[in-house]
Image (cartoon, rainbow, N blue to C red; front, side, top):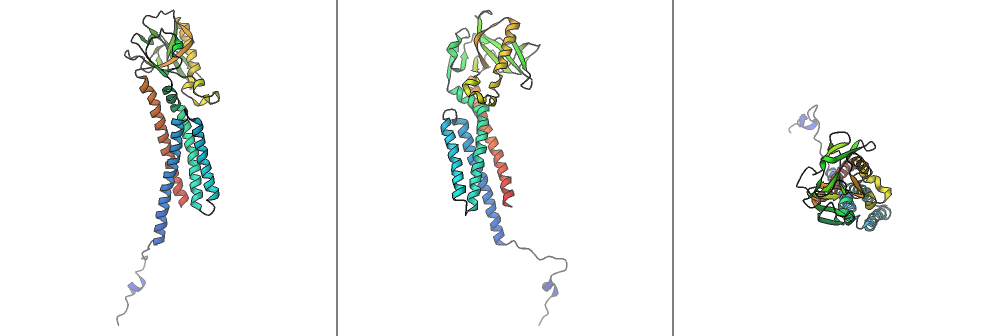
Amino acid sequence: MAERDPLIARGEPGMLPRQKIPQSSRAFQSRQGIRVCLAVLLAAAVALTVALAVDFFFFDHPNWVWASIVVVLMFALIMHDFYGGARRHMRAIAWVVTISCIVGTVIGFTGYFRYAVFYQAAINMATYSDASAVEPGGIFRDASMITFNEFTRVQHGRGAGYKDVDAAGDVHCVAPVMADSQSAREKITFWAVGTNCCVDGDHHRQFKCHDAADNTAHGAVVLLSQEFLIPRFFHFLLPEAAGEEAHMQALHLQNDFFGDVANETPIFVRWVRDPLRYVEGYWWSALNWVFAWTFLYGVVVFFASFHVAK
């Protein structure tokens, strides 16, 4: 009878036996990976849906949007209290839905106040074409976009700037919008405005904001007041509309320097080639804002889920 080879019986010195990963461990890791993916998808879906609802429906249907957010949060609470006692994963889903709903609300409202509110307001207001700067300003009080005739243009050589020390030193610029037939002593209703886009001199500046230097541009997007867009309590959330008072200061400087006379209720506008395209830019900016921050939130949830799953 052949003797047993001692190397086979004991193994070579210094060598470790091959370790096999139990099938149950592999299945566990697979389930954990699936749970992480589902958590990321659920979190991103809830946050994205809530943010889009706020951005694009809050202006016309604020009550419905708030009601939807409350319903989602109540659904998560019911899931946590009534179904999460014996099932741990139900509690996890409830927490994911709750946090994602809150994050989506924050993302939505920040995008809404930065971009979407201007788009929503503009498309719900009147538009005028073939207008003239000599027409009474009261005609255009409900306007968001105006296309002037070829005889109306920005007097970009008669601009003025006001430096706002409370707004990171931004220079708020104004210049009169006048018809060719309009006298310099007539009251001027329309004033083109911009920020950090007037150059030269101290108070007397060349106005080069938006498309003011383009002789083919005759479009204007009206600068809507904060009071019209949202309640006074939320004015600090509108960074773009916050320069209204600074533009008035620049207007007074321009009047003092050039002797122009502004209408008692001036209309501030952004002078652009295509008003509708400019307004649609707010829509795209709001959409990009929502998707970018939702993606970042999904990345955070991804790494947090892996950490919890360990």
